[in-house]
Length: 163
Image (cartoon, rainbow, N blue to C red; front, side, top):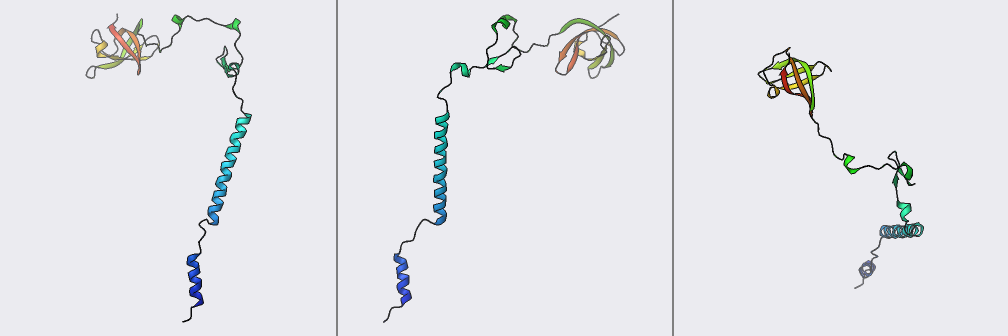
């Protein structure tokens, strides 16, 4: 029996090892190594050019008399001394105004329990609730009251009929 030349060729293929690295894999590996090398070079360059440490004077920032940041220290002659008691660090509370105002009831709904008073001095419309009335009022009644500023606006307190 004679052996076929193609069979021998096929047998050789089985015994030959194939390369596991393709051209694309080699290129990706080269690219990755080049990026790594570039990164190391940049890091070395940064280390070489960076100052080891700045002095305290170089790191200091000052605030001038106008409240702007500056690299130069302020003039000690322009220094202003504040007392801690004089400083207000919180939000001031809305205090009731103790000033007695005069106005005319422009609208009042007894069923709903609220109305509005037109301030005679400033012509502002001030909200009034039935709980703040010392005595019952009707529309066009002249009243005296105090004002409190609330989140929704002005509100009347201690509303009394005036003569």
